[in-house]
Length: 141
Image 1 (cartoon, one colour):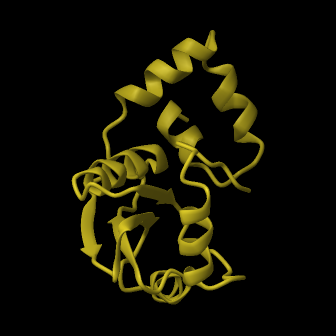
Image 2 (cartoon, helix red, strand yellow):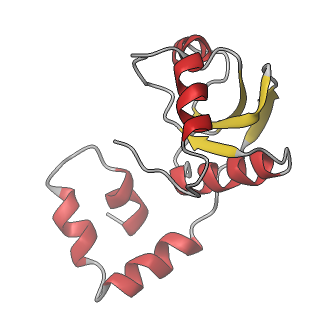
Image 3 (cartoon, rainbow, N blue to C red):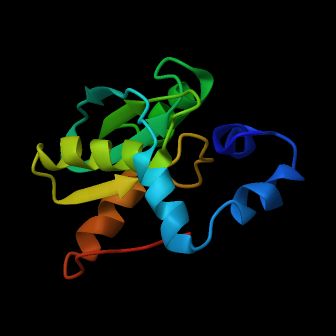
């Protein structure tokens, strides 16, 4: 099995073989960076709150998860980054989405998965972000 086959395998026993293929963490990172990147399709959906932009990597802009996340972040500006396949790279999708989001000059950029469960309304998020304007970065689980 070559390194790509090990990396893409659904067999848990190949995880050890995959990591044992590298002499160091740096070598693994170098390999990851050398892999091709899957194409990304970016779609911006402007909401009434253009100063808050949500970046959402997704496999399907028109799929179930994307439809549900639109409800959760209703009213906010959404940047969907569609990408899939064996060269899908979450970090690359996030970075491309953040670049697009920053071109909109928002006050806030939120990175979100597409498979979220909504607890509060987007209005609550907007009011909380307005309340904490003295911070540059906020991390939440």
